[in-house]
Image (cartoon, rainbow, N blue to C red; front, side):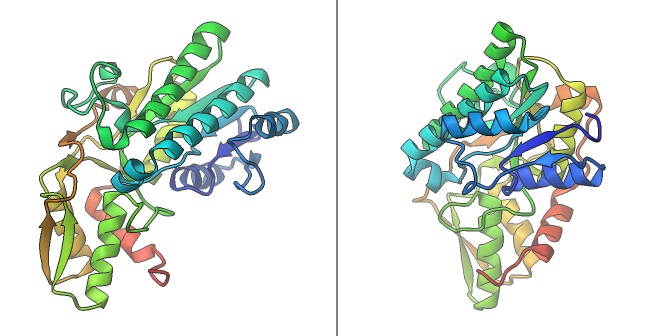
Length: 309
């Protein structure tokens, strides 16, 4: 991408979109365009078409989505399916109609089957059943992947899709009901330390294995893929390392400085037992993550605004 190319970042206020924006700005890209949700309703097809007709972006990073953790995914099932279908369909179609040079769609590791062979390869997509708690979100993301793939096949669009693993970093969601596991743990342990509690409750039994990637590493990968990847199939982006929820909680406990105990609530769902991405394709192309989990969590905890918790 040339430094003066017009680039649209959908979802620029979210964790992923803001990381992409920071990275592009740091590299000298000065022709970025974005709109807040109040300025542009991405579920409104006509509004999105009008925006693309006016702005004529050359590149699109599609990071806008309705997202959340296990509780949010399982509670707002219809909204997660509908809103994500509408957002991605409207943007991808508008990009086609307005001859966008290249589009990158951000999916999620939850598109893969619940019991996929580990590490999860891209070709495991649609080979078995999904994790029930986030099935609607996963189905929407699968539809986005297939839109990129079929638009490439039918129209020759250079639309690609990347599947990031579990992410964390600046601008994460720390709402205890709707957040993902890592930000939820950070907030829980911080609050417990401040309130001098004796223990912190952890959902599930602590056994599930999870992989985490700092969002700044993902942003690097997204720019790398824009320059080097041009295939219809999705490509995984992960850290290639995993940790149990129990060990993750112990790591966060140490970073935060909480001195109490862990209590596991086994009445709460564990989710997928293991979810490690096979990121060998992007690694072989030349991209590797650079931020370790302990380093990343420590920086996130240091920098996050805790005054609203």
